[in-house]
Length: 293
Image (cartoon, rainbow, N blue to C red; front, side):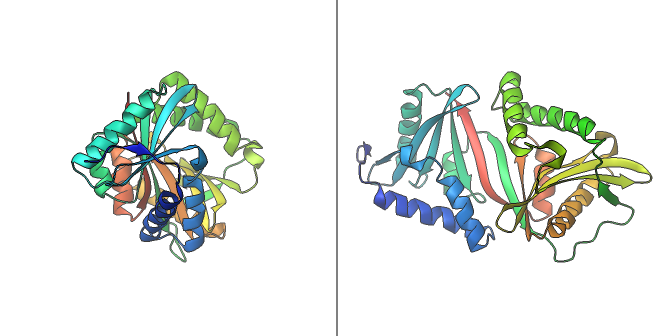
């Protein structure tokens, strides 16, 4: 086995990395404009990554600050599962730890593949999922949808923030204090003008004369994509089939906004939601895993 060495000429690695990422997004059903937009996001900060090779493949690593914590990231590891991949992973973890990282994260593209086996013991912290919306989605019988009113917005916001913090903590990557800081930052970035932020729409879902849940979407989030920040069925109304109904609302809202596909994030630890998304055909675009160091 060859020694792992940092490379100075990154051009070969960069070309291969871009093609691998694009291939994963294309396989998940992304249009070419969307695949390239996602690639641009995946490449954020790539000029600062450290790239190494061992003769069996490539390794790309970096560190950054995330809500007050130093986080190591394994951006690429191409060796097939086996001794070479295990050695490459161990090198990457030591590299991150040597630069003060408190945990190491990895982004895996698409459904289960060789890289998933290499990082099988890294707990899943979150997934990005996507599906093309039906051309003429219909709302389920007995379910009504209306815009959330501006008067309802403050109460909705408080509940949404609390749920988001709880999801982050349950995923296991951050403490409650770090999760609150991340929530504040994410909401400020996503909704700088609150209820009136352009491109965002808020809905109330009603059944049998009651509000049974809410929805929050961002149209034009990426080319042809509506991002579903939240499609929430209230706890007292769960177990009645409204979860699937909420997904239909998401498709309906996507087409209402002139987009073709719906994308959203699900946090790790939410097995019920992941099972629902599997059964309704939402493909995994990216999976995020991390391990404390």
